[in-house]
Image (tube, rainbow, N blue to C red; front, side, top):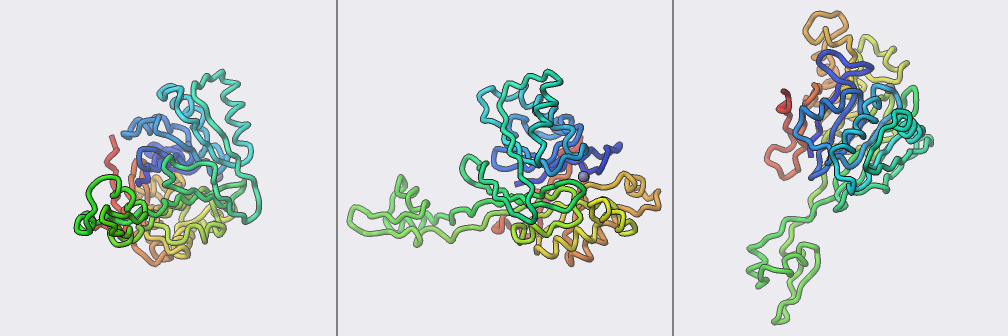
Amino acid sequence: MQVVFLGTSSSMPTISRNTSCIALRLDGTIYMFDCGEGVQRQLHRTPFRQKSIDSIFITHMHGDHIFGLPGLLCMIGMTASPSKRPIEIFGPEGLRQWIRTTLKLCHAQIPIKYVVHELVLQEWVFMLLDCYRHEDDKYVVVAGLLKHTIPCWGYVVQERPHAGRFNVERAMEAGVRPGPMYAMLQQGRDVTLRDGTVVKSADVVGPQRQGRKVVILGDTSDSRSLLVAARGADVVVHEATVTEHEADFAVDRGHSTASMAGRFAHSINANTLVLTHFSGKLEGAYYGTSDNGTIKDLITAASKSFGKNSVIAAHDLTAVTICRKEDPAFPAHRTTSSFST
Ligand SMILES: [Zn+2]
């Protein structure tokens, strides 16, 4: 499970940052979260194959989060087989009409099917997105309404628990031979050997392993609707548009400062916080040439309110690999920018 940032700028692209777009790499498939303009080119800078994109989750209808979507659909259409399963697109009301109108007026021919699921606006409601499941039922996605200037959704992706570890030595000691009985035991079923001995699954299979959880929020000044669903997240991706000097501006515009992001990460007891969606004003600041604060300031402020130092400020093409609990590297998550050209 890997979160790859394809765009980390708010509002408009800068010379080094694209507008909002995140790819969540799962086993063999990719979920996209927002599709800012330039997403196609950013994908070329990764090893991802466009046809691996199964599902697209849109947080809200502001242009910096969706202007790349029609082009991305055309790109997938040109590279995927027409027999590809329909792409599932989730997002706010109006998304379906916008996609269809744009593609129709541009006379875009897309030889693949797509389905748009609009999330209906209800106050503080949790919606379980039962509409899409990974082929092997590995993931559940929950959407929660965030506070922004227009309806905006945040998403929690929860990996289902894994089966416990199968202890081959113990199974052999118990007299089970490799074959179908191994599979039955792994599935939690007890088996009876030829001599009538019953071998219990629980005796040869360890306890279930907890799945990983990643939270990807859209633009927000208040994400409390996801407090429960996001609890214990391995990684939370939170916007930090401006520095603390502009806290009032941030809240007025439905955005967050880094310390607000840190507070949310603290309140859900997250493991790692990744900041993104930076104002272009910080771009100069990043190189120490602006009075608007620096991205370093954002990390400091977020770490303070989070109460942990595991805060990352994403660059374009930053990749955060989310370890399983049994991984020796846990609780740290590996961060690379190895996709950079
Ligand atoms: Zn917005």
